[in-house]
Length: 220
Ligand SMILES: CC(C)(COP(=O)(O)OP(=O)(O)OC[C@H]1O[C@@H](n2cnc3c(N)ncnc32)[C@H](O)[C@@H]1OP(=O)(O)O)[C@@H](O)C(=O)NCCC(=O)NCCS
Image (cartoon, rainbow, N blue to C red; front, side, top):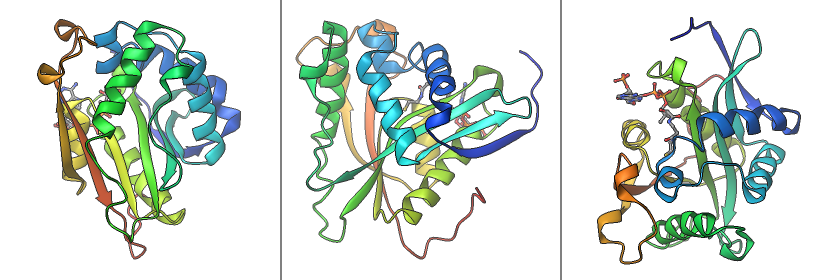
């Protein structure tokens, strides 16, 4: 393990695109459970567009060493009642990408985000990743707190994530998220993922109500 240094946590934007792509290519797409399960560990054109979109919205957060090296990222975007949060399978360019998209859509279909009429805008936590050298130092938790602050600031009434890592599931529950639905991969009829390659077979949809009176704790 290399030596760790003090970090700066910040909101990322379009100038960070190249860095974020490189970081996620190396540490997210090669380690996240859906990508492991479908055997698809490269950054697709779709991924690139999503990363760019999240950075443009100003709701992506990251941690950098004093040298500038990026060591943590969470990408978010917004969902409203009239903007579907389902990913578009027709934009996929490989069978593996279709399988990955279908799994996420299955999990999403388990929760009606707008059943509560007071919820108009939702912050969607799309990807979270921390450099292995910095594991278990609370970076993911810190960045998740920053996301809640940003969500409140940007007028969201709820935050949602489809969590494929038990670590993130536990952190989110600690941060007051609610377990809304579980997609048990052992019960998925279609054979989309190779379960021998994943280290968690229960993907959980978590949500948290965001109050405008939320006390900012992360001090972005
Ligand atoms: C999941 C991930 C983002 C966690 O980042 P992190 O900054 O290490 O997480 P935190 O330090 O905030 O972890 C908080 C808790 O999660 C658990 N945890 C995190 N990583 C762990 C590990 N490698 N082994 C055991 N427990 C772990 C611990 O309970 C930890 O608290 P503790 O150290 O006080 O016991 C990171 O491991 C990662 O990038 N994984 C690959 C991509 C991925 O799966 N992303 C999530 C998709 S939902």
